[in-house]
Amino acid sequence: MVKNITGLPINNNRLGRISIAVAPSDPNIVYVLYKSSTNANGNDHKFFGFYKSTDKGASFTKMPDGILPGEFSSFGWYFGQLDVSPADPNKVYLGEIDVLYSSNGGSSWENITNSYSSLTWDTQHPDHHTLWINPL
Image (cartoon, rainbow, N blue to C red):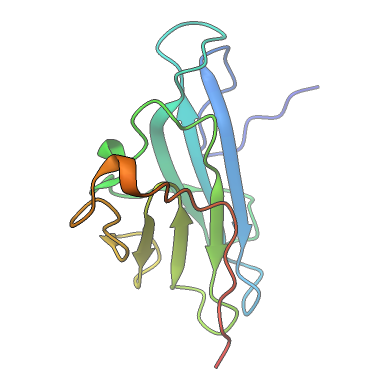
C-alpha cells in the first residue's frame, strides 16, 4: 500500500530521483529534494521541489524554489547529494555541479562554489557526489 504523506507530491511516473536528509542534531527536521521528468518514465530529471518537515517526516512544507530550478539542467538523475550540518539543522548543503548552501533551512540558497565563474567547461569537471561537513 502506498501512503501519501501530507505536503509531498503524490507518486506518479514523472517523479524522478528523491534525495532525503535528516538533521543529525535534531531528528525532527527532515529535508526532501524531488526531481521530475518532462515525460512519463523519462530521464531528464529537472528540479521539482524542496520540502521540509519539522515532525520527523509525518508532514512536509514546500520551501521557496529560489535558485534551485536553474541548477540541475537535465542532470537531476545524476546528482542527489543532500546533507545537513551535524551541528545546525538549518544549514543544508546540496551537491550537484556546484555546491549550494542554505543557512535558513531551505528558505533561500546560495551557490558557494561557482564552478563555472572563472574556468571553462573543458578545464574542469566539478561534479559533487559526497560531502563532509566539519562539525566544529
